[in-house]
Length: 153
Image (cartoon, rainbow, N blue to C red; front, side, top):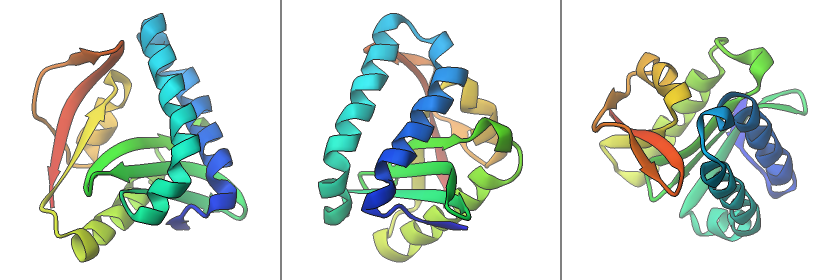
């Protein structure tokens, strides 16, 4: 089941993101990139409660019972800032279910016509499978390597 992450689960959601990032994405980044992402996660953990209350950022999780198997976060109305799924649950439709929930939220409350993401090289195929298209070439910002992508809704 996909639902917004309550405050009590934010630390667990961020821990899942860090675990999946470390295993699948970090090896393709420089030390600077890994440090940048780690700092981003620490900041997200500190800021997220206030940002979630203001609506500037939203975070959803896919729950199986009490266990978090996936996390998707948005910022600035319709930009995906995080999407990670537990390694044992890849290719089981969890990312699609989270994305469908987020798209409904965006359509209903945010009046946007597109969703953007800066995909890691590792996740490009997954985003393409979900209907996203590349909008630019691979980029590097503070050691974070990404490919800008967009989905029209």
